[in-house]
Length: 550
Image: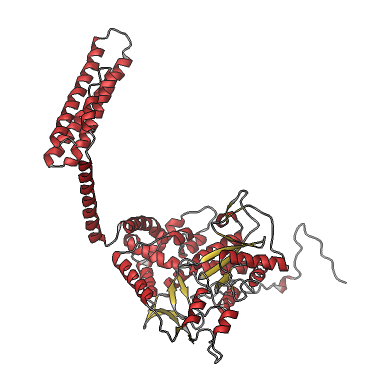
């Protein structure tokens, strides 16, 4: 490896050779007696440009050498040598500057390479330690933070939120926002009703129904709040300025009246569902350590020999678990606790399956070429079911596609296009084939199964999982099914059957979320009275003649 002084000398020598080549090209133009000197002029200009670059890089190498930056001196010297070679080649003179390049690129010994690698690792470790102390994140999460900041700068202005909306979302995130007497409350203080309704109608808040009075953020709402905290400068100070910004975003759309634009500006635009599914939040080092400590504590936790507590959701009873239960009535109902022997608990845990399993239907619309099952089907109901399944499995789970061919496909399994629908009645061979498919995927004994399928597919899946939760069961039509799937996509959770029925009945009149809405009273319609003093109504010109009654 040449020293800094050697690199500086080579850079100055390269600049001098480049200047000599440029002077030779200029001398050739001056001594030419040809009428057309365009080619010689182009050669001269190219040589002079390369010579200027060589002098500039030599000057930068000298400045860095004076400042003690030995790492960049060799790089600038190499660029100066390259420019000198270009100048000599353009001028058509001997390329003596190539010898300088060989001196710069001398092969380093093994000891020099090891020393350079050690210095590089020490430099990288020092920079990484400084960045970790400054940001509290590792390199991967720092990249995620930069991407999240860029996403917030792009998406938060389009949300049209005010500071009051951000505060309402923060109260809901803290678990203090509840509904009572048709209003939203934060303890003993009311929260602006129009803000909560606007956030709920856009899908940022989920308002509980019935006995559930909590108002909680949806996955989309949590992400929107996180982005708003990253870009607070794009949050409007009050509701009026936020409405004016949304009104300006609506603009003068073609075919929209002024009242339509006002109604559109009163609605909050939701986030892109693809962004909600694919966004990954950065995690600090402290959060990673806390998560690792919880996982280590869970791994070290060993139940006592006499038994332990069974989780709230018990696995599906089968002949093995039923035989293992004591005859004294140790079976418990849903939501209660039971004490079982350690062997029984371990057997149930092994038979519990892969966790949450979501089954979606296939569709008639497909691609024209073989593709993974996750991209093959293009039907609208399948697309909405996939979005709902992605929302349910955002924190873990598995998705399978139930095909009309009596097959189960994973999302990454390549499938050829076919033309088959699920029959109304299945034969014994069809049922055996479905159960074999479930065994092939290792989900035959799955306990937590959710079916996002229409009636025929639900009946077929019941032959494998009779205990499965059928979300679309009892739907009166395709509109109701789409509404339920859209609600699951927004909230990321399954609705209670009674709540789903209430939502189906209220969908025609619009959502009120259990909160009172202020609607202006419509003026009473006046019945148009005909003035009887004017006699019989006159016939309109061109109309059919009146037939007088006798």
